Image 1 (cartoon, rainbow, N blue to C red):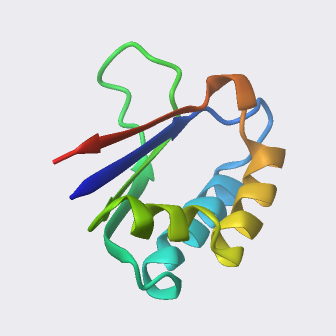
Image 2: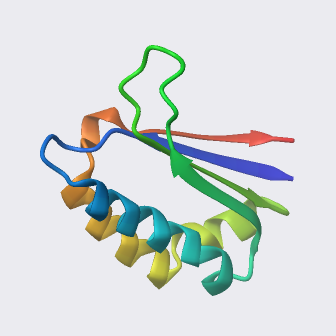
Image 3: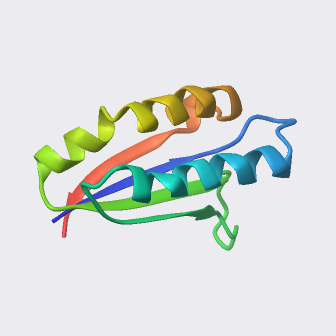
Length: 98
């Protein structure tokens, strides 16, 4: 199984309402992208000294299913919106085998 991990910080001035909307849009991908086994999205609790604001963790059966997720039109559309809210230089993305 492949686990996709995405973390980012929001730009200064982005409201909690906008962040919540973005997180909900990401959550909706679990219904829109059938290749997703599980998808979890949330705000960073801030227990560790980091500027990361949000994280997404998604599980896929294999690399092909992950690639389908990455090029899914709904995912790409949310990514375009996210680019207006997120500090692009803060984004960290990783895929690990679990």
